[in-house]
Length: 198
Image (cartoon, rainbow, N blue to C red; front, side):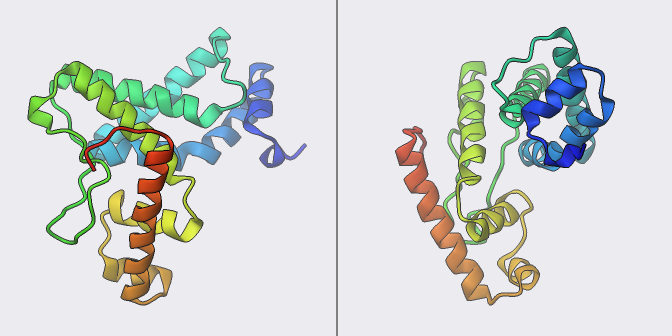
């Protein structure tokens, strides 16, 4: 049986029947997305790794308790666990860091600049975190080239020069893709009725 060909739902079922390799396959399939999602919010490698590990410990415990019932949508469920663990950390630390796209470097609007942090109470933090989680999911609906450039620019803080070199395109092409990505994000945000201050 080639586990790589199986859907997440099937891998979860196999793992619950004792197939440890099935969980390894799930982990390898989704670890980058989940880690990048955590790191994008926290911007601290050590802390991101801790929360990432805590996420998968909780995933395993929840699966083994038989509490998983997400109709096969493993990644959004695991992301939500990571998201909740981050909120727990933020509550304890009483501070929140957020994804910041430096407006001084470009004219791009900051997709994630939803609220001023100093004015937030816990409810605001949770609302904004939920909003950011939804936006991260919306990014996945962009065309590949636009999605990749948005992630490199916002999550990895790469310059357009570096992006152009990595993608083997001109800087103008990179800028154009970013512009279309932002236009499409605005459309997606409107379509899904997300309330932001973009």
